[in-house]
Length: 445
Image (tube, rainbow, N blue to C red):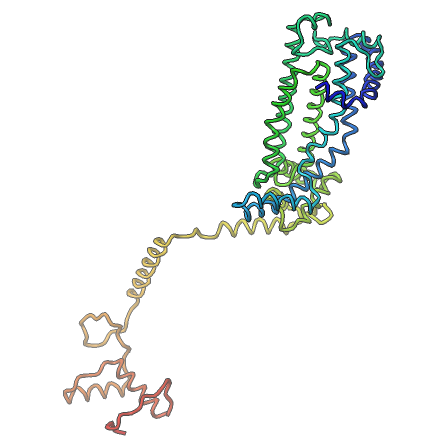
């Protein structure tokens, strides 16, 4: 650790100067030799560094958004080369290069503040050893060695011996209790920050190497901080705990106000936005209008959260416009209610057995209705018949039937008689439907 701190020694002078300037401010309030004056100086150093790193944090957010926009393409690559992991990795790297996306951009804030971290570590190590460094002269060195935070010296470590701790005017028990509590808080804040990013602000419907990387970091970083924390001075632990708390608050703000598309945080945000629009009748705020405008521009590429949001707007009687505003529309309410009524009126889909059973019942009911209808009865016929009774023949036909009975021939069935009569009629008129049969040579013309 000392070797790394010496590597960043070029920045120790600016860091020590910033600490001294803040110490002058807080020393006038709490006293120059108090732990509050030196501790708040370190906290103010963290705040100043993180404010300077806001542009990098914005770049990190944009890179994360680009990663989310590439999720469908990444999923397609996974499906296409799921049996060839090497080719899958090559295609992923090619996609990153073409779109200018860096999957390691989430580490940029940590990498950027690492020089300040090691410079502060070097300053506190020199204070513990009683050596001046940067702009910290001997009087400031003596004041810093007397400063205690909850009974632990600013430059003491968890691994320091009892003699070294006593030389700083404290007990080994106080130092180890304070450092242990700060290490636990530092690791817990790091884990919670990464966990809320994974559980709330990531589209979990698509599994990508980026997702696996973030999930791995969620468990690795807290372990690294816990192992390395026992070698950090109390002042460095204050610095790193403040950094984690700042990161956690910053992450919560981003998740609440600018969530990742397709995540649980986006669903919660759109539901809040829907309630606001329903209550006020408009989209309030330029940032909210930009979000609605971006969702409208997606068209059919909207995710499930965005579709639910538009359905809620239509049900409330609003229609989203391309500029991010909403208009009151009664048509959307009617369409939403009409669509719901249509969906309710649709019958349930029946199984094959149900359809067959229902068809049999329908045919039986149809036959029963036909049987109930009155049929024309033939005089003198008292025998029941399954065939349909023909209608009463014409007068010419009755005479022909009587003649047949007188000669002893069997009477022809009415259907055939009617058919014959119709054929004769057709012969007289010279018209016959359908293809004509060739006449047998022996038949009479």
